[in-house]
Length: 300
Ligand code: EPU
Picture 1 (spheres, rainbow, N blue to C red):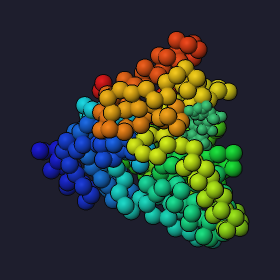
Picture 2 (picture 1 turned 90 degrees about the vertical axis):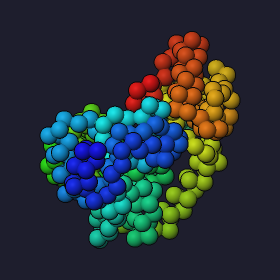
Picture 3 (picture 1 turned 135 degrees about the vertical axis):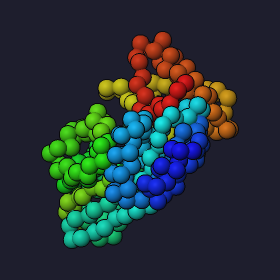
Picture 4 (picture 1 turned 45 degrees about the vertical axis):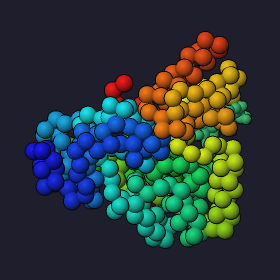
């Protein structure tokens, strides 16, 4: 209880002990976090990180939960969520400043309404702005780093910093934030180009429509495995006969084999066991070891 009271003095957002994580992930599974904390400003986040570092507590940040498989046993330590003020999107001429909890698709839509081009490549990808920066997300129409001018962060010791593009370590689908876990992304500033808003909006709509037609709808974390170099994980998994495989309430989607879905109140263990069976099958048939694209969190 002490811990909860301490945290409530620091943040004005929600603080809850033993908070079930299932409601914070698109897969709809995940046991309790020891302590869940929602922060509502950068200053609050900085104060929280100072507290966490003084007490040497384990911590992690959840974004949209679109790429997480959290174990049924949950997460030890503090789980931090950036609250509503971090969904802010502000347009000023060619610049856009947006919070890391904003959906990247929403930021791209807002850019289109201002005739600003540069985010349409990444604007069709699911997830939050922060997640998109970490993954340097995008498509052949452009990656997020191409328009990213700077990224604001709070460090694990509670300092606020602004990293210019060149300090973000961007390369193809990579950024420093994948290996340097000492920073929490709070905002990003984009330098856009003048574009044709209507054409951008049409592009966003047609890619989203295509995705809705070719990818299964329902409780998923998107693609479960990374594509091995030059190959498609979905094609490989289908080729070794895993489509439709089940484990408890989990299924390998008959629509796209790289989607392992929660269809009937699956547990995290159902999903994980099914994913491991799929990995083993691909390994046995093709001698290819699939790597997880989803982040696997907690104890198993
Ligand atoms: N395919 C099959 N069987 C399947 C699934 C796919 O034969 O069950 C074939 C398709 O017919 C196609 C090829 O495999 O010829 C590639 O499939 P797709 O076009 O669906 O693309 P993908 O490589 O499976 C990637 C991303 C997706 C993203 C799509 C579209 C990865 C691991 N996946 O999928 O990202 O939505 O391209 O841009 O990079 C995600 O990030 O969660 C995700 C789903």
